[in-house]
Structure formats: C-alpha cells, structure tokens
Length: 336
Ligand code: PBG
Image (cartoon, rainbow, N blue to C red; front, top):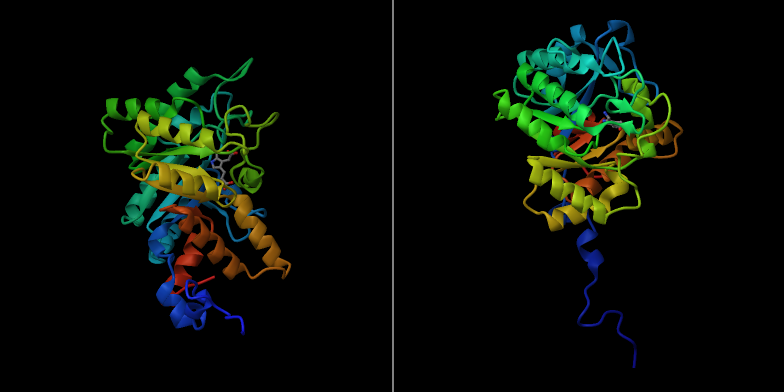
C-alpha cells in the first residue's frame, strides 16, 4: 500500500500561494497611506536644520522651510505628523518647552496653516529642552515627579493653544496623562486628545533619535522611568493606568522588538486605540544594512511595517512614512 502524501484532514496550504494574484486575494494585512504618521524634527536655530547622519534620509527642518515640507508630506497621502522640537536654548528646567512662542507651537501654527488636512501630534517631553538631557526636573534622587508634571501640563497647554490636535507625552513619568488632561481641561482644551507613550521600553534603539533631537542625557540613562525590556505583564499595567487617567490612545515603542506586547494589548484591551512607533534605531538598522547592499530596503521596510500592523497596531509612526505612502499610491498592491 502506497502512503498518501496528504491526509483527508489536511490541506496543502501552499495552493493559495502559487501566484501573486492568489496571494493578494488571501492577504490578511495590507498597508494603506492612512496607517502612517511622519515624524518631523523642527530646529528653532536654522543653522542646525541639517541632515541627521544617524537617520539616513531624515533631516531637521527650520521654521522657514516647514510650510513647504508639511505640504509635501500631505501630498503623499500621509494623514498625520508628530512634531519634535529642537530648541535654541536649554536650561535646567526646560523652560523653553512651555513657551507659547516656542519651537513646537510655532511649528504647529505653520503646519495647521499650510497643510490644513494633516492631523498634528506634538511630542510632550523635556529631554530636548533641559541642559542635562533628562526628561524632567532633576533632584538628588533623579527626576522629581510632581515638579515635572506641572511643567509638562504647561507644555501640553502651549501645544494645544497653537492648534495641536493630539499631544503625546513621551517621558514615562508617572501621572503624566492625568496631569495633562486636567491642565488641558482647565485651560479650555477639552477637545485636545492625548496619545500616551504608555509602553516605552528603555531601548538601545533610540540612539539615532538622540543625535537628531540633541537629547542625550549628559550623564546616566532613562532606566529609572522607561520600562525594562524584559517586562510584558507590566506593559498591561502601564496601558490600563494611562487609559484610566484619560489617554485617548496609547503607543508601544520600540515597535518591532515589542510585537508580542502589541498583540497582547490588542487582545486584552481591544477597545483602546493602539499605535506603535518604529523608532530611529529600527529604521536606521534597515537603512544601514541596505546601504551596504545586505538587505533590500524597500522590502525590509514593508515587511517590518506589515508585521507591526499584523500584530495589532492601528497607526504606525515611522521615518519611512512618506516614502511608503508613495510606494502605495504608485502601485495598487504593495507587498514586502
Ligand atoms: C523622548 C523621545 C525619545 C524618542 C521619542 N521621544 C527618545 C528617548 O526616550 O530617549 C525616541 C524615538 C526614536 O528613537 O525614533 N522625547
């Protein structure tokens, strides 16, 4: 008796993969231009509006150049931007962060005027603004939570007053979402949404960003407030707490190394809008390998972003947002 190659209770799964049209019909996850948020680094001092070596293809923009840049992002079909400010002056308290005529408020006004269809998200953190590079006011034992929360609330109000649709606190300081919600509501910005960096790991993949934003801590690191990469159950606690404090949406970062966490949050808190950030080191690792001829950049970007969406993220922040959006509009089907 000859052994059967397939049993009646199994199926040759490869049958539906034989041609590209068949694969397209059965593809579960596809990327759309509306999935992406483009980060923008805005330099208050135009002399530092330069390319960022550690994030190939990305640069800091001056306020003067920003109108045209925002329009060109909007023209690709990308719907959202997240704005990071690089201030001209730093001090121990990060005072420039809360200035109503600071770099982010001015940038927001320009983007709202010249690219009115974009959703404008702002980064709310002090690390670019403090001379020590930490994410809050420093005391003997590190960042002082309560003093920092007061400042962060003022920062969010300054961004909202300039027209930010969404403020995104990225410092992982306990109580930030509640403090921001209170501050925004009391100042008449009840409609401004909060996208919380709820699950932000203390990650080596942020290295290139710190060159871009001039935000490396002068000493020490951020392990006392960012999450330990070994922890996933704690991620659920962080997410639940931020939602309870009033977060309208939450974020996981870095995205690629945290796909399990994204999937778990999607399953456990299905009603919470979930975003993910493909951070600088993830993007730059792909770009550097591609520059060496070791990897196909386009395929690797599409595969990594598809995986982030497949894991359960809705919007994805990526330095490749506008490039991927162009690939999507040029072709009816993009695949890795
Ligand atoms: C802090 C902030 C960081 C990133 C976004 N917001 C850096 C950090 O926590 O050190 C990293 C993003 C990236 O690497 O692309 N304001």
